[in-house]
Image (cartoon, rainbow, N blue to C red; front, side, top):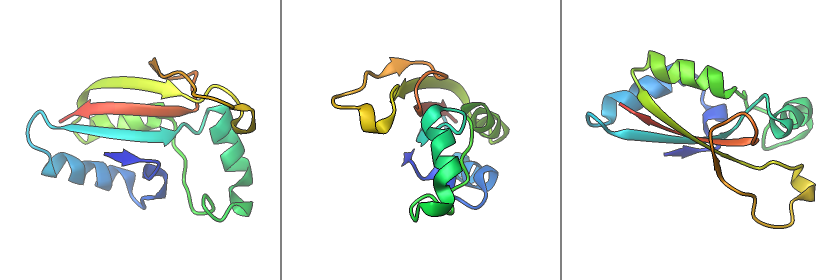
Length: 112
């Protein structure tokens, strides 16, 4: 499992290839990340130079990550998403829904 860390790795394809190598057959990898094409992702990218936490981050889109996962040999993807509002407007739990493209935070489960 990797949550909000994929944007900090130096070589995503190499990282995913290593995950595939160490997982048993039919093992699952779970990734959670902010999609760079989402509203939150776009704000993070625009302001990352002023943010000590995200200054070195390289954000990716869900489609870019799917492509990298497929290249590493992963299949059978399942997606969930959440965070549908600006962060300062959230005053409760955001719903978790299947798919991606609407929520700023995406979860992917991929099978080796």
